[in-house]
Length: 264
Image (cartoon, rainbow, N blue to C red; front, side, top):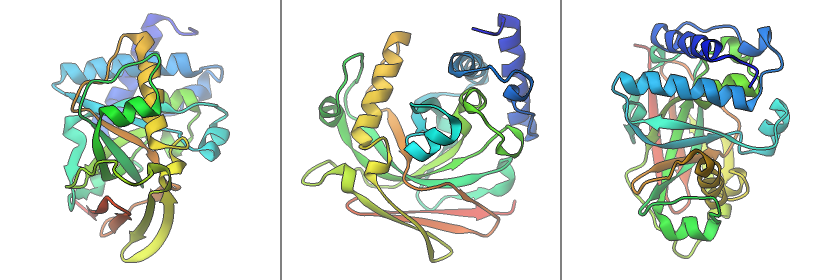
């Protein structure tokens, strides 16, 4: 660790204030370029503790940096993760005010609902499939409390992996007769196709993404409980959002999900 406990606390407080005031802050790595993943997670944990003290409830986890292009962009060789809080979960068709965020982007993803507890350190995709109640069509709004998205790995990890909000489809579809790696998705903005993707974009296999998370959490003494929602990573490049936009992701097998953006 390159930071003292006081420095970790100060960085977490800066992110906490940025979230509550919706005012971005300079990248931590601008002042301390050597900051890395360990420092990012130390800051994230203090920030999570502050939010839990405010009444937030963890209902699952989100993965980021699950595609090779994004890992190469930030110079890392692994994904990152952050808790998902219940207050940031919405239903299909939800309308979210653009003013709730600082610099929001949107991504379509495959979410996994766990039916039974899952833990590492030797979790495999097959174990994930056995523990899985099913897959859910989903979209995620990612947002950065770091100014202009000028993020290095330590910045985004500290900032809850750039978490904003998620919306989940109404159907939970068991993995029966299809391979999640080739599960296709078409993403539209205001009726126009802007992206396509498939499950393999998420660390090669959404099941492998969940297994990675379980194994990464195990040394921290964290088990994924039954009922957890796991967002397995974007299937395409993130897309900026504006007031009035309507986004729709249509997934093979899982069905569609729609999110509307208002100007309020």
